[in-house]
Image (cartoon, rainbow, N blue to C red):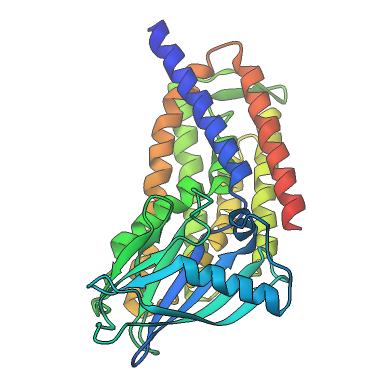
Length: 370
């Protein structure tokens, strides 16, 4: 049993270290590509986060002006590679670049035309894209297709360091088409969204502890831990589900910067609470309230896909289910670790150290996002 306990503790330390490292290394959201079918060409609209684009370029972002735009157009043309079924490369041309420096996070918006070679079909090709991902292994690109100007878009899949291309065929009219890809996108959003994960794990640090005289006391037992986990995770889920749906439908829309700052603030609140109880027995309401904020950030990933109708509703449900699935897997790992660690005298130092690291990361994020 002692050997098993040591392995579980080591796994817990690795889990926390992995989340904190991801928090430091994952500063901005994924890229997005919308492929729009024309009569004899495909228009590609790209959104690339500048923080990660800078990491992918050896000399950093190009200088502003005509030469900088030309350098960036050459970079995109080299890393966006559509290929016909017979292996011939498509003709790629960058039509327009827009540098969105004033928004947070800052993005590059690029419009490109992709033309098939003579005799090649327009509705069947392999879309290759390793922009940013060729240098930043954690970077994710979501690819969607729209077959007509008024038609809903369909998520084709995601590209990353290990998968740099996907097959594109005519848009499937069925409303449930692409739901599986959106489900995986929801799982990836939690697995790679270090701020959401760090908030939840920090809030759960004292889950197994009792409160006495305004301080965290001893281990409260397995039942106390499981009830705490169930209440807090359920409240967080209800909170972000409400604003995810409302935000994806466009009922609620807030600028990204205050939402991202509020998410960092939620981590700071959780870290202070993990050090010393500031809202004992009210964690459910805190989880629900901050869940509303996190849901607004989740909704931005769905809005970027430009879905509507039944496909939008199905995608929101699939995305949320993906989030909950990954969340549940993490909780299944965290529960036995918390149960084991909370019984040890050394857990006080472990909890306080983790709380300090989370608070430091939250302060860094707030400074970046302001």
